[in-house]
Length: 460
Image (cartoon, rainbow, N blue to C red):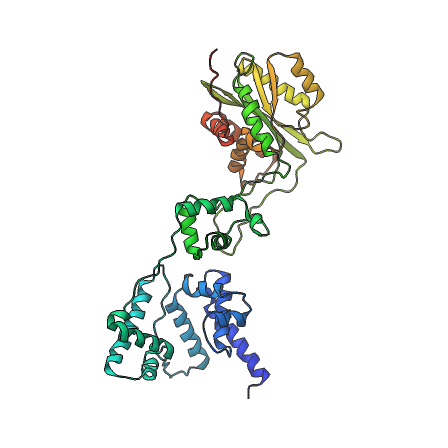
């Protein structure tokens, strides 16, 4: 009779074994699945397929254990060697010899797994030779270490088609998704995950697989869904954020009716500009992905809070036939009580005057609805000066502002940079802005990212 203390001792020994072979699996999920699968094999269940160990471990489906056996990367030979060393250290004698019973070869599944298919075909052909010799089903099943039901199925196939019926027919073909069916699938995916009953706005391969099964009545594997999406130009991406308050109809109307006025203004054609303030350059740099050891998060040492903050206002200046330009104005703010921590409308006015002098012509200004941009003093200044025309972007439409792409370039260059002093931050910031100034194609790329074009006006 097995006592509780003996069962607890076996459980501890099993945990030690898992620690011994766990390093052979590269990910934590694989190590956990390996542990659950072994415990399921040791459990008193009738059949040892993936379903019973998965139910024993509390998994809702056997997908995780099937991925461990068929799709993950690990070396069976290395695990066998570790297991032999563990058994020898626990049960072996100093002058003893370890004898292990031979078993069928363990083959990792590859796509397509020709080795496994050839091995199974060889077993069936050996069974066919024994059928011809008149051996019994139970004897064949015991010698070949397969189930009696499989031998009976092979015998029926051998009686109907001979040895050729036991040969492999090749891998099964996945259902074909036509272009018309994929167009239907794209329309369904365009509705978003929430329209199909999912909790968040994130498409995964499993969810796309579910939509295909519901709408197209096809059963595809996850790997086939991945290949299908890649073949039609889909990829795994980080989505852009859009405000819920955004009015798409107003944005399209602005593109059709307001933007042509920028390209063909009533005044003599002058540089079109776009402006936005970046209120948030501090001693803490933006984060970017970097390489590091698996399981060890890279750490970047940065300075603590500083009493100085840097804001930058920038103008992307475009004119057909003329090289694009970038005009910017950084400003430092002391984080004192009652002190202003952003640009005032006078600062924007001075920036416009500076741009007017440098560009030497009238300006059509396109900028967002920042409260400082709507200040009454700035509106009076526009009304008093004929060289300035202001056009507002639609609300919640930062993707139409090319300066947003400019800030993305600056933040990407400053990512993971540990600044020693605020002066160091200012120096790096000015250097990156100067680098973009000397590369007009980057300024042109910021306009291209908005999807807007600036064609020259047609002569009357």
